Length: 450
Image 1 (cartoon, rainbow, N blue to C red):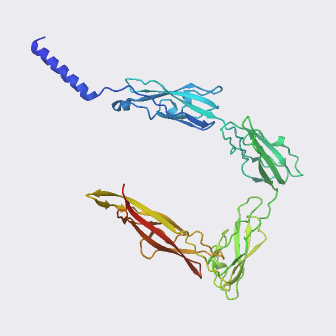
Image 2 (cartoon, rainbow, N blue to C red):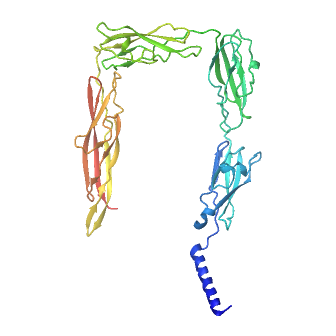
Image 3 (cartoon, rainbow, N blue to C red):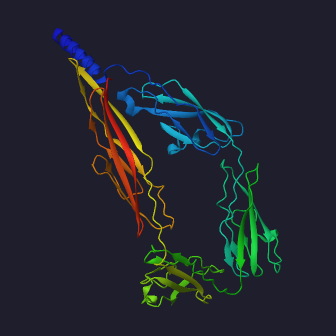
């Protein structure tokens, strides 16, 4: 090789070495695995493994890989590393598993940056069995006909530790006309058995579940069997006597109506009687076919209503309810209660320069106004109004029984307490009378030496 070629080669080597240093920077440290703190979980609950505290050289972070391994499992466990759930593999920085038996599970984590591999770090998941009994759930009550198959549903049953369940279904009572026994419950050891009733009446079915160690309390369901349609029952609700402050319109309630065959119901409301001077009629209902319509009244007195319901095959007997609006009643004044007085002491740090103290502003402060102790002896609906005449208190919702209020920031002076005594009023009103109560807000702003 000629001398100038040797010199050129040397320069190229120097340049390459300088480029490698520039590209790679400081040599990377070997990664350090951190499998996280030991965990305590209940049997059946997921345990979350977190390797995010591991350290990998910043410029090799994209090449980093994580390998979790289950080193030790408690006796009786069928789990291995494949039980880790993220991407069905143990190579995610965060992963989890659900233990299958109580005991200690020891995991290791190894981190690689593509060039170097960390030493393993270990963590332990301690799994305790609270050994709570399972809970039986036999599902909803059922209605049906003689000879029809009814499906029971115990799939809502559960075990606190997530253990598999065994099911036991039994008849605890059957109609006197029935020859059925618990042996007639088809698949009575399954979660969803079936029953074919043989006569009309109420059948009582109980479900008990076991987790292999303990039995649940029984849960009871009823089978209501009828070979012919049964007439529904109307329930027009309870009668009401309003004082002076009656709602207008007021709402009726027929939701207590029912059908023993669980057939869907239609509703028919009608006005039976009204006060002498009233011009109301069935047209005063918001909807005569609704379960809970509104009724708009026009004069004081007693309004009597009738409700009937139909299951599509038969109409119920009527049920009667009355609503009385009494303008002659003595209205009792509500009693306002604005709550306890409020004291707010705020401080701010001051700075000294050439023996002159300069203070910032005391920060704004929030507090609560609570008028919930206000009451009305007649149970009338009340309106609320909070006010503060100077405007020093900003009330977020002046019309709420409970509301937040704020005093804005105030100027401060070193070692001087600037105090404001503010009066907040609460006015409450029913439809005919009102009352007022006050509370005092004492606010103090002081500049202090830090």
